[in-house]
Image (cartoon, rainbow, N blue to C red; front, side, top):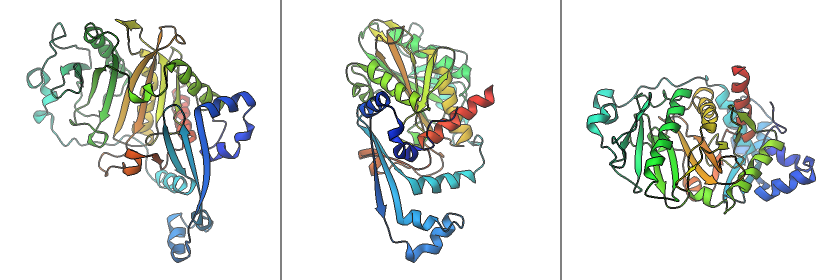
Length: 374
């Protein structure tokens, strides 16, 4: 299940190996440029050799650094990769043990409002019983809303790293779609968005495991930027991922999973699948993407040993999927919750700066998880 190319730099070096049709699709979606930056490392030569484990050839790599910029023509999103930086970060990660972080929650269940949600959180008046309940999760009304319909889906588990099982993700999508069926009765044509921030480093205001769902009068900006024919654009993303050898079919409903070539943050992965259908002119979330989300969180928590992440699900109408709609899930790794934020001015106002997660390396991690499951 290895990719056709070893890295984003290998892709640039061998771009001419794509056939005419592949190159046309690639250029329609992506803009790839390589630049060389120079520095004089003579004064810190010994330190450079030490940083790279005694490798003398590292000095030449530091003094002449290849920088790759890849931009998505549809999303207006782009990322920078530095060959030397990537090599250094991957070397550091190799020294770190894999496995899930043993998180000690800062807030105890006894003092957590979400652990007492029936008495410490509000209900939604548009829901028949005020709340929706599944085996692993229950809804509450978001007390500080950003949309007329904005609720939280609270997992039973207090520890935010625990509810990543297939059952939890199935319950999340099931409860989200039932919520949509009620919320959109009065708001036809709205776009539901499902988000999951894990830990404060990823924007979570509460440590307790929870997701958020809301309806918007327009789609998410990144989905809107794809243009009116979302389906065709997404099909191009999938086509490029397939001929680059980094697309994987996951689950039993035809969903496709691939690492983003221009990630907004480390290890960005997309899962694309059929929607749950259309009701009240609103596209619902498809459970086709559930297994891909589980695998992506496995990459983040088990392989990368991170403890903060973001998940965002958006939907759009298209005749290219049987249900009349498509579901797109984006998952990104936000690193260790205890470290300082890695978002600087470039990430917020400019381009993604990628350290260790070359998209082709991310695909290798996905492939290893699937191989181990056989």
